[in-house]
Amino acid sequence: MTSPEVPIALVLDYGGVICRTTFERQPQIERRLGLAPGTLRWRGPFDPDNDELWRDMLADRISEREYWHRRAAEVGRLVGEEWTVPRMLMAPAPDDPIDATTRPEALAAVRAVRDAGRKVGVLSNELDLFNGPGFGAKLFIMKLMHEIVDATYTGILKPDRRAYQAAADALGAPIERCLMVDDQPRNIAGALAAGMQAEWFDVTRPAETYTRVLARLGIDAAESVG
Image (cartoon, rainbow, N blue to C red; front, side):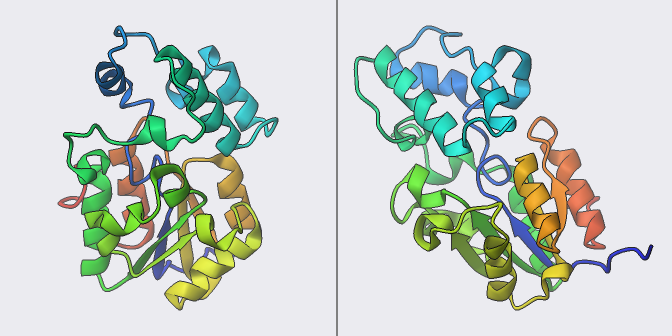
């Protein structure tokens, strides 16, 4: 069996891969909402044994969208409000810059890929759906992307193979020469089934994951990701 050719284009998910997860930002969310520290006990991939709803999502009993809709509704009830969209939970604090949740490792990796003359883009299921219309266009890191394919507007969600093909087409690269990076196993499986190369993103070890990603692209990560 021959090894796959070195990818010429990088395709990134947004939530978890580019943006720090809501789980990582729970202390700030609690402070913003006036909740006691430790009120939000669900930790997703950081403590799956104690997050039954997350395990249901991983087992495909519910969708990722449903997971976040339910969590947003729960937090809304804690503050006496009816939250119907996850953006109420995921939005940066009002006094934080819009780019505050971007992973520094992601920004460094994107710059390294561009410096190496490779294409880089985003393939997201709910970038603007979860964060508000036009959110992606406001982020600094998104201005570095060659293309953004967001199912908020296309209506085609990963792991549908058409989503991956749309990303490859947008970047002008053969699908087999694209590397998809996603934190959801189902989306990794979908990328592989569509003929795209893939690397699972471990949100508990972002720097290590980006080092592996750059290595697969043949890019020296020594000075890029820390």
